[in-house]
Image 1 (cartoon, rainbow, N blue to C red):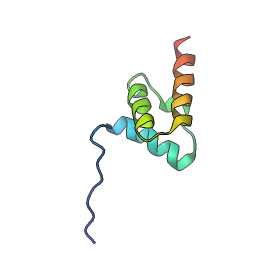
Image 2 (cartoon, rainbow, N blue to C red):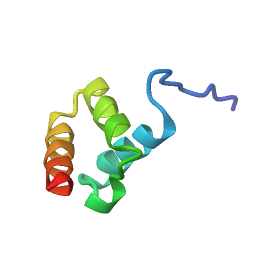
Image 3 (cartoon, rainbow, N blue to C red):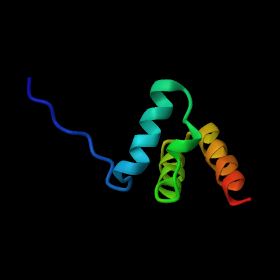
Length: 66
């Protein structure tokens, strides 16, 4: 069959990778969040209305900043 790709133009691949990890496993490893992908992951979690993931990202970010 011919499948059309699904695209989310406002989300880059780093953010989408975190979303997929969360959706498939129910969690995200802290080490998966880096200084380079944290903002994108938070934005993607907001886009998909994943408030638990947003809270996890905030907690992890705060922990890494201290």
